[in-house]
Length: 192
Image 1 (cartoon, helix red, strand yellow):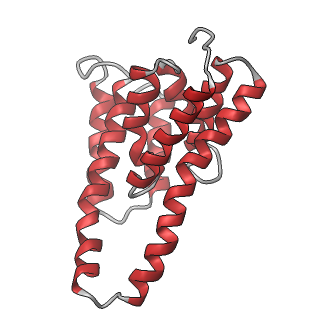
Image 2 (tube, rainbow, N blue to C red; image 1 turned 180 degrees about the vertical axis):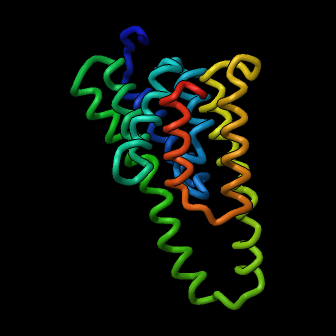
């Protein structure tokens, strides 16, 4: 557990502006900025432990609702580490407003413009060019989350299953629920 933090208003403002910046970089969703959130919250500031960070993402991704909820949990944990329920609620507010406001405003303005100019060659090229960036950001997020589970030599079945699942998703139209169910069965039998 991370020791009790002392966060001043300047720290909260810095957290808010960092998440505002990440909001503008979150092409493909907030989860694509998870590696930089880890760098900032865990490595640079020390406001969260690695376990708190990973648990926040795991809990939010397994819960029903939008996947951006992991940002609320990150803010919650920062606030709890800073002194209790009041700072935790402030952490949720700071992180969620920071990650939602800039991208929401940008998407609203640009979607109206791009819809009006959808036949322009530059608009079509931009949409096609963003796909590899989103894929790379998602791979970086997966790498950060997988790195917390140990080394390749010890956990090679898990890494092999992850790679195999990625290939199946890429090359087939098999529904993801079948793969999740298979992964759950393999885990239940202790094979991964």
